[in-house]
Length: 70
Image 1 (cartoon, rainbow, N blue to C red):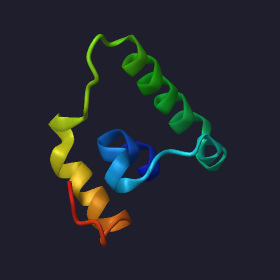
Image 2 (image 1 turned 90 degrees about the vertical axis):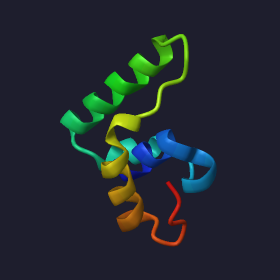
Image 3 (image 1 turned 30 degrees about the vertical axis):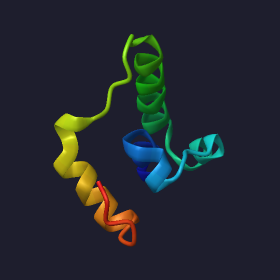
């Protein structure tokens, strides 16, 4: 899930999302990710989870401490 969220936040800095990672999440999480994929695909403008910046920064600190960049 972290790879997915960080790819959405800034794939250039934090890496992309490998679709094979879906095999490593449970069905409910995969369904949530599919919901986000669908929602993003239908938006006229690209949207980012900026309302959750603090939470994203915590994910970065835990999963990508060397980048240290939000």
